[in-house]
Picture 1 (cartoon, one colour):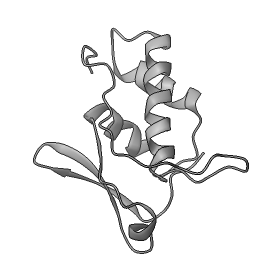
Picture 2 (picture 1 turned 135 degrees about the vertical axis):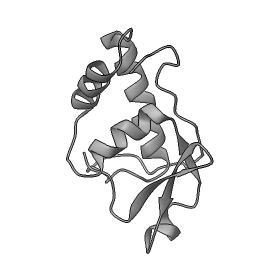
Picture 3 (picture 1 turned 180 degrees about the vertical axis):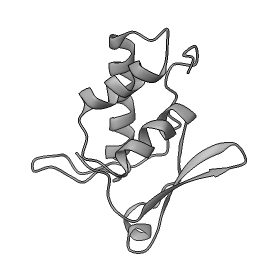
Length: 112
């Protein structure tokens, strides 16, 4: 998987916001807020192809007190939000995104 190009992550008043630029403004009309944990993942995702398993590994490396099952559940939710908001490059056979803005939180009790 890959993130689409022309997307930037900005921290605004302590919140992380995915901001479309250029032609992506027409494709991604929603404001998508993500948590600091999701922003940590974004920093990897913006420069690499990735799998859900790689993202789970990154969470487990950074945060103590998170189980693999909890990390996988959070990553699945994060990927779902990115797909619904047309932020991921679509794979053949993927459903058309429905949209909606959601705040992603990777386990509040996790510590980095």
